[in-house]
Amino acid sequence: MKKALITGITGQDGAYLAEMLLEKGYEVHGLKRRSSLFNTDRIDHLYQDPHEEDVRFHLHYGDLSDSTNIIRIIQQVQPDEIYNLGAMSHVKVSFDTPEYTANADGIGTLRILEAVRILGLTEKTRIYQASTSELYGLVQAVPQSETTPFYPRSPYAVAKLYGYWITVNYREAYNMYACNGILFNHESPLRGETFVTRKITRGAAKIALQLQDKLYLGNLDAQRDWGHAKDYVEAMWLILQQDTPEDFVIATGITTTVRDFVRMAFAEAGIELEFTGEGVNEKGIVKYCAHPDYQLEIGQEVVAVDPRYFRPTEVELLIGDPTKSKTKLGWEPKYDLPALVKDMMGADLENFHREKMLQEKGYPIKNQYE
Ligand code: NDP
Ligand code: GDR
Image 1 (cartoon, rainbow, N blue to C red):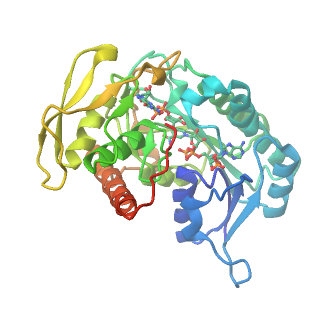
Image 2: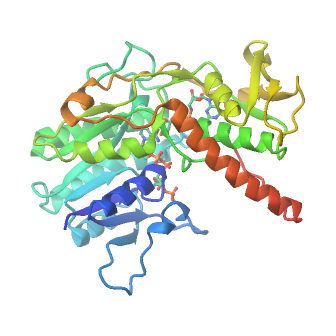
Image 3: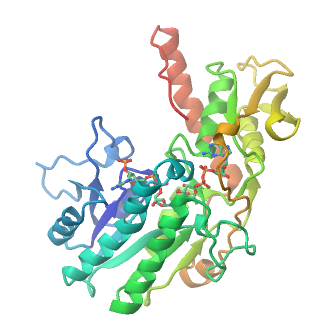
């Protein structure tokens, strides 16, 4: 039975990857940070009572900023595969916490590689590093492939650039099976609530159900190549199953503006939006509401721009070239963007129908930071 260790197991990708590896028969170990509240919502369905027999799912307390903890866990688990998904993954927040981001996302990657080397596991353990399309940053060429130059535009991307190159360096210096997956944005109903797609699907669902009046967003012109996280964790696994270790771009090859994502999300609830005005004065207004249960007025302003969400330096355009992953890995995404939006909106409408019922019974809805 193969053993995998996943850092970032409580995140979006960690949850889907753990589920997939368990289905493939792996024993799965995850690194989990201690927090004052439970932070295992996304993986609770995978939990197995450790007192039972044949348990294949194990969590270990740890942190990417703690080398001794990482060395001990890797020594104990002796993994065949490590998926280093743990990171401070929010681009905007990295401008507020640049030093911590460098430590967790940059040096954290070094700690994993170095632990494997110190423990003499370089021939046994294969390592996947969660690299990112944010490395491309300021557009040099499109579509972006494995050979496009990098120009990172945030403390997050600069930290991930270190993670990318230290992975390449350990592969070349110590002959390790260590690879970068350069993944473009991927989303799902499990996506963190402050990333733009989930913020939009939650906002659209709440507005349709009259739990919220307006959705405030930042740069509506940004273009992203969005895929579904379920498809992307399959690619991570494929990258570690090849004869030779290499780096791969994982993307759909199609790009869409934030504004069009907003349109598609509202359309899933039967609400047609029209955008008027420019820059900070741009607004999304209800043009038509086809759903009998959602009482929105024609002309009602439901989307507005708040410069608070602008970034000091922005990544305007991402569009990936997945040719190498399609030919060498045989990877093909199953979800296109409409299917992704449908999945996310379906889940958030269901979530907020439930919240509305609770609200009607007198339970207040929690405030959440976005
Ligand atoms: P999430 O933000 O959903 O999950 C991040 C995970 O990392 C969480 O489990 C979090 O724990 C954990 N983590 C954060 N800091 C530390 C730390 N110091 N030590 C240990 N664990 C830590 O991210 P995603 O699942 O979306 O992304 C997974 C990885 O892929 C990340 O590295 C991200 O940067 C990268 N990536 C993501 C893309 C995307 O579009 N989703 C695209 C390209 C790359 P906790 O739950 O306790 O906060
Ligand atoms: P990104 O994702 O920065 O691409 O990083 P995010 O969803 O945060 O932003 C995408 C684009 O939307 C614009 N935007 C807003 N973003 C947020 N979060 N909130 C808003 O209100 C808003 N309005 C407009 C942003 O400016 C940006 O252009 C994600 C993360 O998962 C990274 O970890 C990962 O490496 C990359 O994707 C690939």
